[in-house]
Image (cartoon, rainbow over all chains, first blue to last red; front, side, top):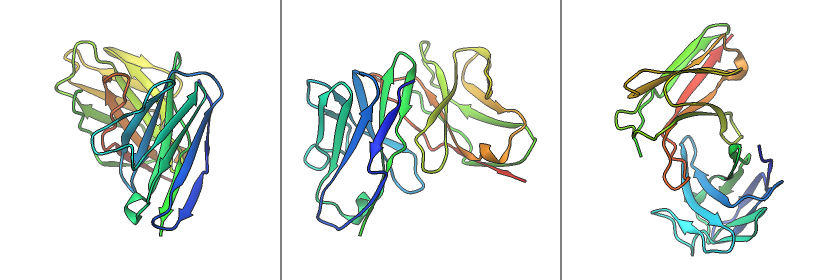
Length: 112
Length: 109
């Protein structure tokens, strides 16, 4: 399966600021996904990021709040913009390849 | 996507077998049933997948009755390290996984 490196692993940020989360994969993958996991909750899909096209956002998530870049087949970033305490969550990236789905370890974000 | 229902939590002791049943009444003909495991501070990890009858791997067994409206994940002889959240997923929507609430399994010594 793919190996995913997600950075940072955790961060504490001031409200009103932005944080960019990086997801690096050890192999080329077509589809990458970004999820949010709020405290004590399950995973919710934010968007699908395909190389060479705009990310596709799920209902309730917008590009202005969660801009995504996908410059090549091994890398993607998710930015959480103008943060508020409600954005405190774990953010995870995921990829799919011939072996199935792999998830990163997540970025634990605390907004104060 | 088929809606899934599974118990919120289950407690067990080391060495016991844990069985988690997931209901998915609206499963489609082409849907596979997949279980993921998530430890604290980690992303979900694939455990097992099946379509019908029984599937077994080195980690777990998956039992699926003929009507496929439910499935049971069986964890044999659990240890403390099996304490995790277990998610039952059914089907895909454009390759997108849809996670339900999951079952928190707590294994005690």
